[in-house]
Image (tube, rainbow, N blue to C red; front, side, top):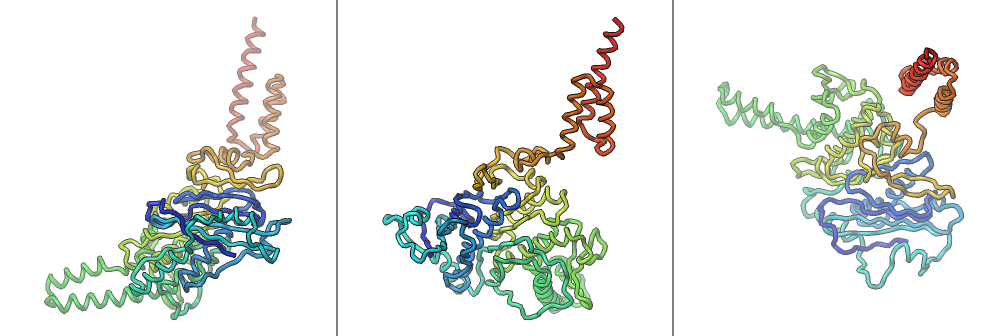
Length: 470
């Protein structure tokens, strides 16, 4: 059962973005409304709290949007019977999306009972009212398809991508296909079960670099024919072509990579064996020799940039194209230092894409503002609730662990020893306290609380000495 409509034009922004997601009886989430931030949304919670559930719900709903754009059919992923919350009869999902100055909404449901017609519970979820203007999401997707047909694919379409936890294929292929479709609509190929695959990336890179090389040779020949051979004029024109000509789509990918890894440059395909090379700090370097974290970053950023380049063939900077990008466990494979900068860089390099990501990383949360963080927490009754932190940006890792992730920043045994240490000091059992300090220093030399303990002991000993002298 689907419920689709268009609501009043209350959003003036041109950027396409998700507004709200309503979840009812879907896996471990019984009832939840999520009001999305227009740019960055970070889901945080323990394993099993529902981060992947939210992303999978979005993927189900967005699959209808994608198939309607591709072929005009209202098909796509469905809620499976196994996805219905235990002990419930039905599951329902509803999504609101804004585009230009219109707000669209549509939903899907699955019932274990054959007929749910005029069920008040379903009516409440989908807000049925005889006074509302019903218009299908087809109105939006049909206009996009019409633009594609009328312009012979010389128009922009939004990218929609879901990178799951198995998203990265780090192995480099020995060979690639040469007949893969890279037309405008190919941006939706495997978009909601996406693997940032180096095979597809290399195939596209190889095709674009071949086009770039052919166009380069053509421009050089034209320059030579239009100038006098051997003159300064010919040399100047040729040099200008060498310095300035780049394939725009391929340059989009290069620019994205350089933004995240500025020490890499001059990306190119080499044959026999097939490989992607770059210069790292000026030295030739094979990309397959990078660390898993670096390869993961290049694969993720490269796949987003490639799809944006295809989806925006006439834009001066395709990285400014529109899109909705879902990423599960975005911190996967990345060093903590990289995790700190990842979210700000994604927003800077892809400014008109809306991200909904899941993470376990306190390093990521410390560089995200509180209005972009959604905490999925299981309450005392075992019900998953949505909570929002009061602050996050600039907080230390320990503060985030304790205040946002509800995780003790110290090992419980270590915390117990520190508590006992200060109890010994207060009871003036200083010899035992000093012995415990040495024990803790054997594995925790930089513990700040040991300095405080030392100072407290010295203060007590000083007072005791003065008292003895009196």
